[in-house]
Image 1: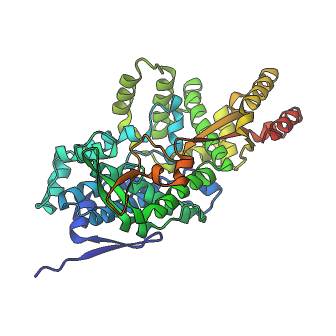
Image 2: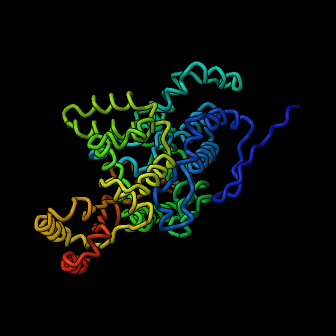
Image 3: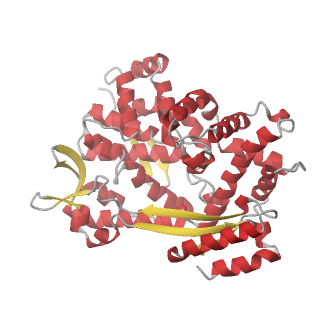
Length: 456
């Protein structure tokens, strides 16, 4: 009789994440791949550890957690082994397209024209190669993969229409494995309680629900409190962690550095001769060209062209490439904006942050514009900036979370919960002004800063 081994990963969030021998055979080939191992070197929360020192966890550990959660949901809902395999692989690979410092890196592109999910098909195409599939199928003859199943995984990740909406909900919805994991994980590593909720009870209360002719992921009436807790946890984590003023000011400085570096490479090519073999430099040269040619009418075509031509560079980048470039430039005396920004980052001279009330945002924008016009020869555009941070805690129209009551009747969550009804479809906007430390220390900016503080 063959013994059914269990593989255990020790994890600070769940204690122990257990995977059966079969599940291990499904996910280990992906985990061991170069593309996935790269996620070890990409921090989950950008520069959050500059504010919350413990927040050094990575996309790697989050992806493993997400895979575990998806597997737990699949078992609770009694998925077939074939469906459980697809859901676990999709959850494992859902963040495979992230670049250095996660979402922060997306801001190097004009109007965030290219975000991490757009890179996902490029990465998944590597797994659709015959060499990978052959090796995978040798270890999984009972449930082999082929190119069509990799396409299904891609559809689950990319929010594409899938005939089995229940599977898609586990991977991407308002109650998906991704959110369920990152709330607990981010909360733990940041050392805060905002993101805590009753995961085990919420999992216990999950159930398939027939809605508009399709099975969807829902929750029984007993789980309403747990869902409310979960959604409020997400709202609080967004307000207190993701939108933390100092974190955002540091990330604004980082993305500004990368943009200015891209421009400096073109403006001062002789200085960057020693860096010509640097993959980050090569990638940023392409980014700069893409941004200069940005055109809404031809955007889709240009995006696809950029993804195809720059994938080999992008897949080789991680946080360390950016950090080493900051260090190298910060220790030079060469004068250009990228070097100035590198020094601010390297020596942690972060911008001053002033929070603005929503009703005063237009006034703040006017004060800043007047100041820039008056001192345009003395300051650069990035040295004072008003950032707008909208957040929607719960969307009614975006596949609402479904509740099954004791009689079997189905209702959307916002119709059964006064708390969720109160926050549904309501954007909560935060505004903050980031002021470069040198500007903040100059006498002629004191009057502006005084005015802006009065708007907070």
